[in-house]
Length: 150
Image: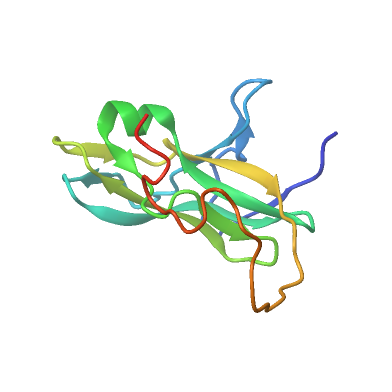
């Protein structure tokens, strides 16, 4: 089953291809850098917001999850600090990606480079209820690491 996702070009975006799936089995669609004024060379530790050059209209009941591209993350040390970032169905601004370079050598991002991927996911909404007690479980209030290592 496919659903429609609508993209509108941001002002000045005359050439970037629409976000797209690289292969028939890809879960995420590639998002590209919109850098009409030229490339950005990231220094280690540098954080920047990079525009995708597109606004988006998502189907009701969905979100767009912004995730790192594995090549940039594993080969060069780029992360998306709020990963996965969420684009809500009612957001109509330009989609931007927060990138941070954790690698040890500078890396240049150019206009049109694939910088992130977007996965569209269903969102379930729930009624919120305040209660006096919660059900018991074997784990209880055990937090980080409480179930052991490995």
